[in-house]
Image 1 (cartoon, rainbow, N blue to C red):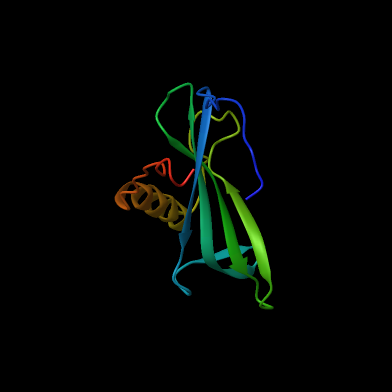
Image 2 (image 1 turned 90 degrees about the vertical axis):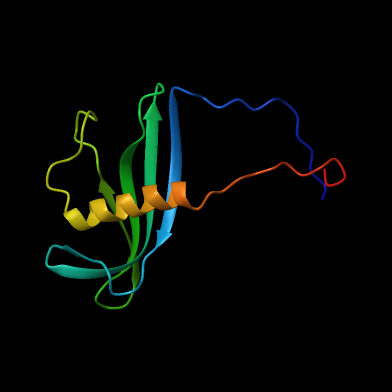
Length: 120
């Protein structure tokens, strides 16, 4: 690999974001917008922590199929306009997806060990 890197990366702690993707079993979630049904097959939930506050779900980006079979993206903002609480009227099914993403992020037990000197 012909690549080099310099510097010492530092995370900006004021606004840390983590995206968690979950694949959904086909037929388990349908979103309806403007009278059209969209079959959801994937969700990407963005969690954010501002200035070391507790993590909160910010938005969900769904990958879905429209009634004609075409793939379409759907994004749902989960925070109210003041960004200080949950948006009113978000369907319970969407909050269940958020809970699944939050649970799977903690449950999978991902651990990471940097490769040894022989691999670098």
